[in-house]
Image (cartoon, rainbow, N blue to C red; front, side, top):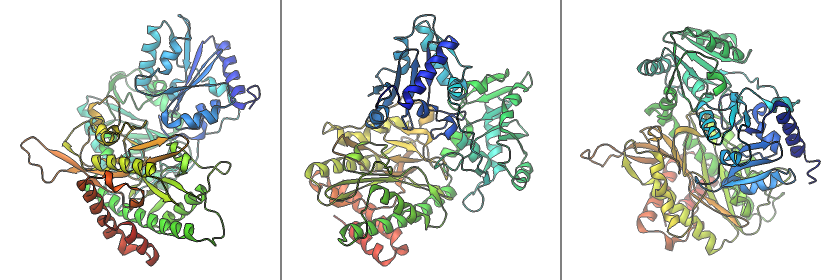
Length: 603
């Protein structure tokens, strides 16, 4: 593509004009919105709009004469393709020690320069780090400019989908009880008021759901509460009269979305405002002159620990999800074996048919993320997505990776499986087997309660490290309860361990090691697990936890090199398959049941 006519090139040039007009040397465009969400409504997809890069994470930096996108290894292949012709440099973040966008900026802006960022989409903690780094190289940060808004005349409006109440047996804990729990934590922190801006925290706290963010049943809103009252700031018309009355009965008023800044500014002089510096934006916090108390949102910790009632609902959702997958994969194998099928099967077909199978299950609401159906080399891109314009047909020989999930009213699912198409080679089997060994190792782990998740990361990597292999993404992310498929504060990844990343009973986390060979294939084997007390460990050394595997779908043994598996690993796989068969068999049609028996046969 001619860089002179590339839409991204023209947009970067417009941003550079605005930089010069404002007297700024550079602009930082994060992947974020006023709620610091991972998945963004169209209005706040500024980095995508400006650069053309559609990955879910990455930072764009624009100076008056250059532009660069910073992305980790999950997105390198995708970013190279999407940035082609834009003139934007791809800076690869290969490790925690790699050059950051702040380091890059400091080498390119003169001392005394000003760097702009929209403070309304930057967390308080990130703004503090950015300002400190820039000050060390003699630059200053300006956070009151939204240059993207001035450069984007056709910018979409905020979403207007209605908000609805999560109720019934799938919502076992009353809104009033949750509010009381958060208020108690607020008081313990010494605060008189508390601002909640992250959309999943707002939804959890008020037992509300919405459709403002793709794949996650949440809505845009803020909650400001004191010891007796709470106000939900939400788009006009999104809460109907009946729901407003139900909220009012629990002491929750509804106000226009844009009024939150004025409400913060009007807090009394002696107010002490609790904010989470990682989950509240600089622009919003600066509206208040109240004394600030910084700590993690109490709701973030509370919602990460699923109750026994919620865990029971999740197990039922896993059965529904497993039934849908068994029905679909039985159909897929039959179709691939049918030489007289009417149409080719593509990666798009897999997405369509798997979604249809899930949609037939009770409690289904929608996908929990965009399905990744990746054949052969496409699997080497961890965040690959097939499109009408670019997708593979499932034919010939190779590995098929399917990473998919669903939102049910009683839980959120996320699972990845590998399937052999035609014949696969020894090298492919070796990779799948080593990745499975990593999944098994972490799934079987026992550890003291409160162990930070990052300390568990190497357990899943060790079987790969033995063979000189590794992967560039985290091993596990938290999963919400009919909420965001990616949920904190826990994480199993190579990040600095903090107290809030500790694994506690009731937390649901993914286990998903992988191996990716660009141009050849990618492998990932993923289950969701629930942290539970370890039943057979004594208390002489304190309480220990272990993981209960929740996901229910066979792991295709045709992809495995059994000579690489130890006896205890084979025993784990056979026991897992026995559980899958026991829980799914009563709900399957005859054809899917026969498929299940084949795929769960002991090895």
